[in-house]
Image (cartoon, rainbow over all chains, first blue to last red; front, top):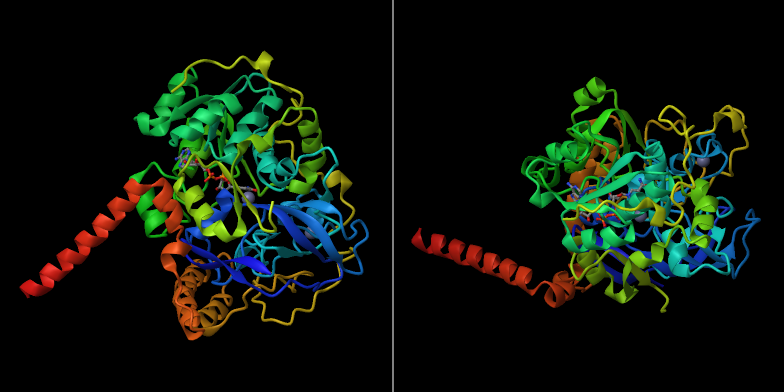
Length: 382
Length: 159
Ligand SMILES: NC(=O)c1ccc[n+]([C@@H]2O[C@H](COP(=O)([O-])OP(=O)(O)OC[C@H]3O[C@@H](n4cnc5c(N)ncnc54)[C@H](O)[C@@H]3O)[C@@H](O)[C@H]2O)c1
Ligand SMILES: [Zn+2]
Ligand SMILES: [Zn+2]
């Protein structure tokens, strides 16, 4: 089969690889129909995540047809068209039992801090991912869900990650009616977070980014007030002025360690890698939130550590809430939202490419070229 | 920049999930529903991997399911094995792994060459997309590269 093959920072290609096989009685093999590239993949692509081994296949946002199931799989049969949450979760451990499907204890040998994630380095378990024609899906009864007849597969594939992640970002914000919510990052995750903030009753939603075409899209898609941080001298003062000098009720970090916007953090975090990426968006979030406010983090950072103003978290009595999205927990509610027309994720898809062109798709998405918001790869043709 | 406020009455689904109980101290996890104390539970079947799996020393046993992509090999593999003697809380664990990742890239090129394959690095880096959508950026990169090369040549000649 053909699969994406990571060769090093900024270098990916497509190669012939052996077909995946059932390795555990709860495994399924899925023939991939759609597979996205995610902002999280960019952290791998940029060489930011430790233990990203050459030869691995990335891809944690995919849907496809079940080809084969292991002897302990009960809920799926060959031929089912399923969407597959990015978290690999056993459904039985104490974390899965609490609905923390992103924190499963039985899916990642290499680290305890995060559960297994498809195609996301060995720090997230060492599983080959879905940017391939076929993929091994462990715990097939727990994560995967048959796509409802009425649902567009383009919406289904976005339900594997960015829709639940954005929604959970808003949920963790504990948004109360009328709250002012600031979302850092107008990528697919930030867009979904802003859109979801309205569902929780936000009174005002502000999005910060520096990519003009994304801000333009956010203005009408979310809809939201949008600001380009390159045009603003001091982000925190600006947001204070927007909020009667008090700060926002809720700040959401949908940027993570690949942030731009601060030369010092870029030098020590992005270039020298002395901290786990550039944490300026989180820095702004902490300093721009109201006293007693909530900072909700879904942006991904490496495992080492980051420079953030923790003293201000204490002094301001800020609550920080963060996690990898628990996709499975949120799916039923989000499917309802799509059916009711409250959410329209597929409008974010800007590029559809065959697997053969994946190197170009990575570069477009990473360099933010050609108006790219969300690229979808079609590993087995359209 | 936009300063217009958004009219919430025009937003489909506005407020449908408003939840006053979801204040920051209300946990997302549902301990009430917990069916296990974490000690006594029906653990999934254990996978028996046939490739080398490096295991975090913070695990007391191998998780029931493991990924079998790209087992450790070569010099980078040796460094990875060494890194896994330290916990996830130890900076050296991660810094050694990052170092191994960089060495692994060189090993990847050697592996390609040993199979008679010269990696097409410009294509792997999305050169075609750069050419189609960022000619200006490409021109700058080429100019910088040419400048640096010429500068180095000039320096050498002067010596
Ligand atoms: N927690 C989870 O479960 C989860 C799931 C998916 C993605 N993520 C993470 O969410 C983040 C966003 O993902 P995405 O797919 O939207 O990525 P993306 O790269 O498309 O979007 C990130 C956006 O942030 C903008 N940005 C950069 N610096 C900024 C700054 N200082 N302030 C404001 N905006 C800034 C970029 O211009 C870009 O538009 C990533 O870190 C990704 O890893 C987390
Ligand atoms: Zn993702
Ligand atoms: Zn689990």
